[in-house]
Length: 150
Image (cartoon, rainbow, N blue to C red; front, side):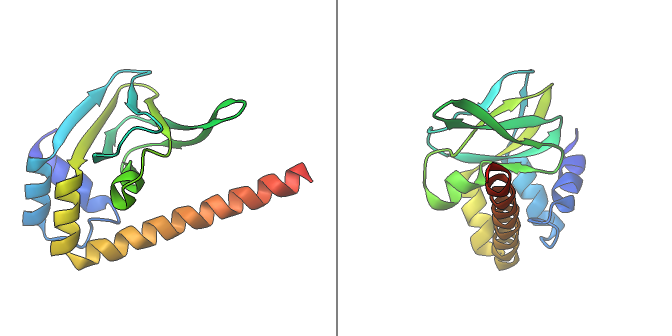
C-alpha cells in the first residue's frame, strides 16, 4: 500500500476525516506499517500502551482475561483503531488482541497521536465521540448479558 493509499484509509476513519490531507500524509509517513501473521499477538492485556494501531487489512480478535479464562469480546477489521484507550489515559492494555488472518496495521506512536490531537482539536472531538459510541455499545451488551443471566 502506498503512502497515498494509507492517507485515503486514514481519511475514511471518523477520527481523521476532518484532518487536512497534508497532516494525514505526515501521520502516515511517520507511522510504522506493521504486518502480523495469523495468531500473532498485536498487544497483550496488562502491557504498557505506547501506540495505537489502525487496521489497514485483515481482522483481529479482542480478548479480555476473566477468572474462567480468556473471553472474546470483539472482532475488529479494516478502518478500526486498536489500543487507543491505553495511550489516551495512561493505563496498561485493557485487552489482548490477536490477528485472525494476516493483519496489516498502521502503528501510531503515543507522541504522534497526542501531537495530532493537540494540533487538530476536531480530532479530539472525534476521539470523544468514538469512545462514547463504544461505551454505549458496552453498556448495551452488559444490559443484555445481565438480562440473560436473570
